Amino acid sequence: FNMVQTSPVRQATSLASATATTGVKRNKNFAKLAGGYLFPEIGRRRNAYLEKNPDANIISLGIGDTTQPIPSAILKGLVDGAAALGTKEGYSGYGAEQGKAPLRERISEVLYNGLIDPSEVFVSDGAKCDIQRIQNMFGPDVTSAVQDPSYPVYVDTSVMMGQTQELDEGKGQYDGIVYMECNEENGFFPDVAASPRADVVYICSPNNPTGVAATRAQLEQTVKTCKERGSILVFDAAYAPFIRSPDVPKSIFEIEGAKDCAIEVNSFSKYAGFTGVRLGWTVVPEGLKFSDGTPVRQDFNRVMTTSFNGASNIVQAGGLACLSDEGMKEIDNLIDYYLENAGILRKTFTELGYRVYGGTDAPYIFISLDGKSSWDTFSEILEKAEVVTIPGAGFGPGGEGFLRLSAFVPREGVIEACERLKKTMKR
Ligand code: PLP
Image (cartoon, rainbow, N blue to C red):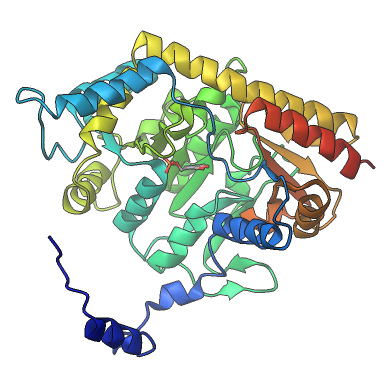
């Protein structure tokens, strides 16, 4: 069954019209966006190198994409979830837009120890998509504050929504966004109180790209400031399961008062190798309100019910398997594996004499290049060692002078990359 007959005449017409324009005006906010999204740009440079050097044996310590297979008990959840659809009793169609009740309950119970109610959990197809939906809900009239450097999605979605003015080319920052400096001196965590007030404050811990997890005291201070200023804190906890240090909070809701000012976005992507499977969730506390008294949850629910039709039922079955006792053990093992990789990377660069951050409570390590250009270093490493890294500058001007390495690599890849880097990064 062909929806469209592709006759030669039709093909010719579509070719001819490829150069024509429509009468539709481009969204002016999209025109403000600087260049492409960071990770495709890295891929483009890697492919350009491969084109010139087709025999290159490239190892990627670049994009934070998981590499290890999904462990068996979790995989069984996915397989059983799919198989159920082939039976009369197990078949299901559209589900609740907020996610299946058993999964919302397990998330509340297993990951939040009952600190939040299942009705406050919105299951989705991932944290990145939820950040866009949160921005959709806030609209163009809010101001946003981000850590600098930070995961690029907070800034780019703020620009797309029309919350900003133009990019200031000199500063590499958009006018209208509050950039909260994160550097070696402040332990890569911003002093929110020392930054101008913003309506929405994005904090990511453990952080991408710095790999540093915020302490309890830092988060308490942040919650206090947001409450005093009437800001909403959007807390991205996508790397929470990597936290191994005692007393480092895994959720913002471990901090007193957070339910009055915070939303948390989270994801199974890095928990269980679900980057391609796609499953995440957002917690919007019942008591969180806009200035006119409207519950934020009511509007987020409206976004979900209007523009999302629920996460895949197969994938939600996989999510439930993640949260079984066996699944949680498998997640721990998977994360131990990546943390061991991070340890190898940390050791290599420390021994080479670099100042190295992160990698103990996160899958990323952040290396100081002592002011050297991060894009130059990226190119040099790609050409001399055939290793892909990520230049810190890709995460905002505050990342310049640093390099991010990802521990999401098979072990032999890390070992081989370190051998090569010992030669090319020698000081
Ligand atoms: N948040 C942070 C900080 C991330 O680094 C990533 C992915 O790398 C995401 C969210 C995206 O998560 P998801 O795969 O659930 O969309």
